[in-house]
Each structure stands twice: as C-alpha cells, then as structure tokens.
Image 1: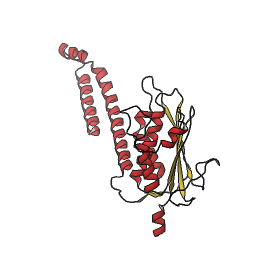
Image 2 (image 1 turned 90 degrees about the vertical axis):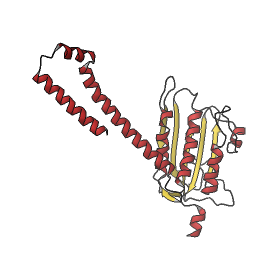
Image 3 (image 1 turned 180 degrees about the horizontal axis):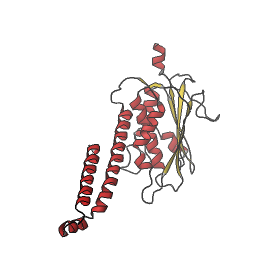
Image 4 (image 1 turned 60 degrees about the horizontal axis):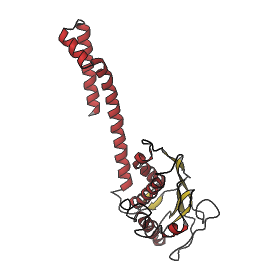
Length: 261
C-alpha cells in the first residue's frame, strides 16, 4: 500500500505544480490556505514521512520473519539448522533493549563466530535458550556504567569446555566427552555472581531478581533443553565485579539419533 501512496502523492504533486504554472497569480483565498497549511513544508515533509513509513514497514517485515524463524512454528521435529541464524534472530528481537535510551547507555554486542556446520536440534527450543541467556545478560548490565558489553563466541567442541585450557568438560548420565559438538559462549561485563549463587543458578524457581521481576524458571528451562532434550551441557562461570559467562555445548546430532543411524 505504501507504493500506491507514494504514487498517489507524486500524482497530486504533479497536479499542484501544473496549477501553479498555469495560474501563477493565485486568488487571495488560495494564498491564505496555502499559507495556513504551510504547503511547501507539507510537500517536503510528506515525502520524508512516506520514506520513514517504508523503512518502518521493512523493519516490521524483518522482525516478523525473525520471530517466525525464532519460534519455528512449522518445525516440531529435529531439524538441521544454522546456530548463528538463531542467535542473530534472537538479537534482533532484543534490539530494543540493547539501544541507548534516556540516561541508559547502549549495550554493545561483540560477535566472534567460528565456521560451524549445521546442528540437528529442536530449533525453537534452542532459540529459547539463547533468548533466556541473552535476556539475563542484558538484565545483568541494567545498572552498569558504560561500556556495557555482551560477547558471543562460537566454536567447534574440542573435548574441552570453552576456549581456554582451564575448562574441563563434565559428563552426566554416563555420557562421554565428544568433539562432534558446537560451543556457544555468552558473556557480559556486569557485576558477576558469587559461588553460592552459581551453585543454585539452574535450580527451579531460584532467582536473584527482585520480587515480581522473574519466575526463576528461565535457566532451569535452559538446562532441561540443553541437557535433557539435546544431550548437551551448560555451565556458568562468574567473578564478582568482572562479569558472567554461560557456556553451552550442543552435539551436532543428539546421541539418541546418532545411535539409531
């Protein structure tokens, strides 16, 4: 419809210009109305308004597509997906929380993406993990002074947690460490957490947020999705005064699927 509106405006503008050329000496009433509505400003601003509406419409289309990709409503089964696409779609949805607003400074997102193969997973569930982890990172930076930074790193699993050699990959449910996996690290430079909180971080209903600000289920759900649904691993490291990092490791193919092949 904006295309039609733009064309209608051009037609009316052409008609006005033709009238002005044909009848350069306008009547007093026409001159009065022209001055009253500020015709020249109106014609100039209308074009800017149409352009702004076009940008807004394109933005809405982009967000709707991202929401659809985020929810994957048409994909209730295991699918081979691009992990980076899921992260980027989540960031787009959260963009309004990353922008500067009033006295609140912008949150910068630093992305360090390795070249990854596609991962066989429940896409909407993993996107929910990204949403919870990124939302928590944003919350952790809410009262922080600038610079406020969220860093996202991805890489292939190498039998170790994370990038540094100080990470040791734990195993649960008699699972063996695997190199056939991807690792996603999401960190912030917020105030961090102490060991007592870290040990409870994945417990249902545990939250450090004020009453009414959180259910305490977000990270518990993340644990269920990563560990129970995808046979992956998730852990949290944090240093008070320095920030927090969540590390997620997801098999390229869930173990129960690879065993059946």
